[in-house]
Length: 321
Image (cartoon, rainbow, N blue to C red; front, side, top):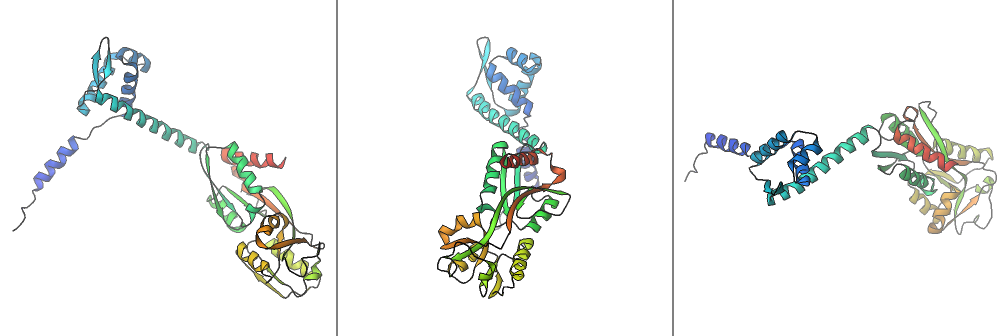
């Protein structure tokens, strides 16, 4: 049995009927209505709104006709809300509060008072605590900003700064770029990380010549090219022949290889102090290796007076006092 054909005219009429039921309510109607609901008197509401009473009454009459609902009923010399009016008043207040919050948020973002601050940071930078201290100080100074941290090496950070992908960079290198400005947050001495049972672990300090025949693993050269080159240059200056030199991208993997005695590595003392108790490794100073690691926060020079950037700069300056 064939199903009855659908009537295009009927569909059009149904659509028109649905469209006719849509209620058009402007924000000013909601504000007027809420004020009247609070005052329970058209005259007092009109005075509070700085409008004439007659147009205000007409606006509310139009609103009731548009909604097909009675919102008010007489009550002595004033008016009171009907049951429907009380429900509508509650919803209207919620809508007005939401609109007000949305406007304030939009203004805050436009003025640089609100938003999310995206920070690029180098692997291992969180171990010293300087980054965490900076974030805590910034949070107190700018509590309404959200924070997002993205791991990336220095080169990636600088590109992201120029692209506007991040607001700040945090890592071990200062960029040779006049369009970027940096502030030093922490420094730390570089030393040797060894397994607890390594032949050099019993010594209070070591020398580069003690590394003859040792397999050394480092972070990739592209991550910290200056430091990478300085370490290799220092070893070669002592005419030390290593048992091998490898690169490991993951810090956890690097620690495991050191802990099992497969290799040794160079690491900042503060970082070693945090990871050593958990990784069966020890840190020893290298007397003839005069290398330090710096941690710097970097931003675009032209952005220095933006509220969010200024808040972080001031936070950093306070920690450096």
